[in-house]
Image 1: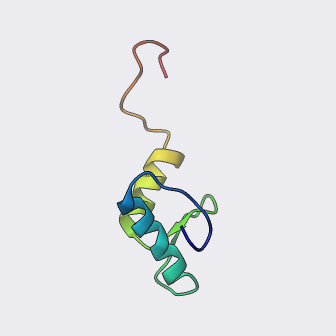
Image 2: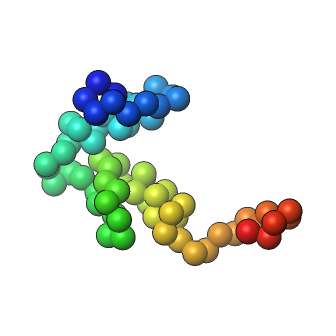
Length: 66
């Protein structure tokens, strides 16, 4: 990202990330109520909530049980 220096392996991820800078300071940002995460897309916030803050993981590793 030319604004903050973050690196991304996919162009789509960079594009989505750049929306954060574009929308920063507007009411279009979706903020996580559990941490500092924020995004311009509701779908990404939903995915973040499930991946990071959900204790409901339906897939269990057969090797370690996690």
